[in-house]
Amino acid sequence: MTKSVLTQLTLLLSLLITANTFAKTTADALESNLSDKKTLKVASWNIAWLSSHKYNERKQADYDKLSAYATKLNADVIALQEVESAEWAEKVFGDDYDFYFSTRDWVQRVGVAVKKSSGLKVISQEYKALNLDRVRSGMQVTLSRNNKEFTLLAVHLKSGCFTDPLDNKSVMAMADKTEKEGRRKEACTLLSQQIEPLEKWIDNQAAQNKAYLVLGDFNRRFSQDIAHKYAENQGLWQALNDEGQEVLWTPTATLDSKCWGGYYKDYIDHIVFSPMAKTMYIDDSFEQLVFDEKYTSELSRNLSDHCPVSVQLDM
Image (cartoon, rainbow, N blue to C red; front, side, top):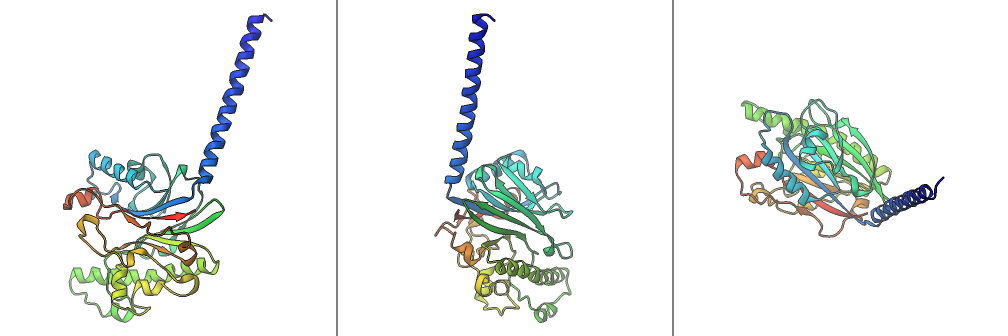
């Protein structure tokens, strides 16, 4: 073997060793950077009819605007509502997230997006018990990092019964002579039926002494439940808020929504904390990402009629 060939082989071996060392150093640095992250941003966003449904009339410019707001939101974990699939979610979020969606055969699905760079370990499971008579399932996701763990349930409850009492006597007494009245009564009936499986999920998490969140579009104005001083069987908030590890808290119960200029001042999108999850909450970190555009009915369809809400956790 000539000296020239030996020199070339030595140089090639040196380059391979250098490249391998660089790759290992980069991987170690990335892993160290992820383990050093202490703050986790968790959000909820109903992106109205982000799907193949005829109601979705968005053009590319609308998807570009949504993508810009998704970048501005910059959340590690996002509970999604009214999104058909990962393919549709990627039109807004690109390939920066892994997606976990319910399987119900309907374009309005519930899902959870987890940022790939977050360093989170994810275990997902669909919660089908909420799917009553064509109502949407939930998505349960357990997330762990830095020796901390919590479980979230992403929900999109039945729409149309925002403030009415939910006890059987009140619901049965509701008028149903017109089509509008009939839809409202049906909505209250279905929402009241979703309480039991939602309570059951909370009971199960509390019994295991877990840190848990329930978040998403509840289609219920908790502030009005509280203002009306409903009994436990009348208000959704009162039905869920119990004792021990079922004492719940949400920042949206006492705040006014600014979405679309405060078009609806009472929140229906909530992030609900268990006592253990509340210890992870970073004080005053609740935010609502308000769209810059002035309200029009077209914009509320092509962006969304919901603005994202978020909190930050110490994790």
